Image (cartoon, rainbow, N blue to C red; front, side, top):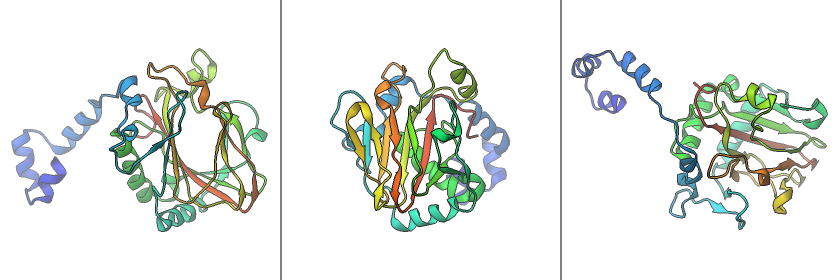
Length: 249
């Protein structure tokens, strides 16, 4: 609202006079008043509706909410992201187990290209009608031939040390949205073992899945694995949404 008023030609001083407070103070107040969605709101996110644009196509299973969004990013957007990712790569980490469980490299996109990260943050948040602060900062991953990420879930198991450590701040992970930035000649599929389905990396294709059930409990059927790349390389960009703010402010 404030941005639209200023874009329409109203002076900052005039807006502050009407609001009876500085714009900076109002912005801080709005940040504090952000009300996170309930579990059912996450379950019924706009992306899940047939009339949503861009259209998301649900995997034919009652066991989990998994959607494909073809061509979510253009070739040019994918290439820009791959270039940014390769500027600042570090070994990927895991929340439990040793480094052999995940052998890719990771880029924290905000550090490589803050403007690009901010634009994509907002765009992906809009798919779920949530503020991007209800998420983790964007990460890019680069897999060389032979690299993989063994089977895992994105949610954290309640009652464990992992849960205590990784949900404060931010709360539980809700949705995952992952976009393939290139087509892989061979290998590199994302496989959901319990659902009997693997997805082949195709440039611009996004996968979105809800890590939770409608009541907020973790969904074990979202166990998945990044299969080894057999030929070429694989780049992806990943966004994890969270139940609360605190990780992407």
